[in-house]
Length: 175
Image (cartoon, rainbow, N blue to C red; front, side, top):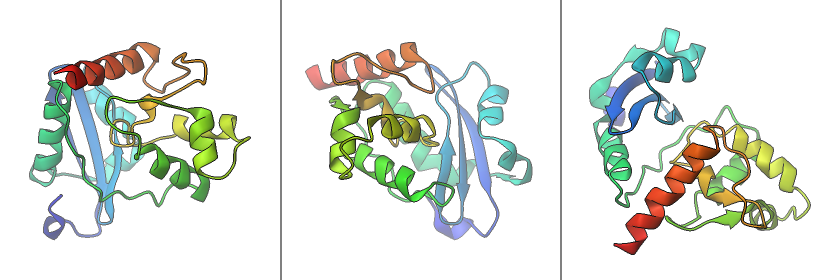
């Protein structure tokens, strides 16, 4: 993300991918939020929350990130930026999200695995709650976390979207 463009103001964009509209919101510290693909730009914008009302439309700021999402949704592996602004999260949420970012593309881990990684082996439900509040889906790949028995579990974008993302990554790993 081009930090020289950013000042203290929030910046945002909505853009179209092959499977829907994505919204992105950033602060001077980094990316604050993204949406999963939505049927319209308006729905993607609404999912970014009220912060968009005081944010500046900044399409050029997000060029690299838009390209990453387009590559991802075309079924190819890509690397998303590391400049994230997780200041709105609790320390526990940040810990869960940072571990979740380590799950390799095309692989899954269990809620129990995440809980063990953060040294709280009995906190599987709390891990699930933290993942449900993830403001950066795909970049923080919470869709890669499943139940210990292999069932998909919950997902803020719905189980069908979770299944779609896992299938997309699995196909890319076969190529």
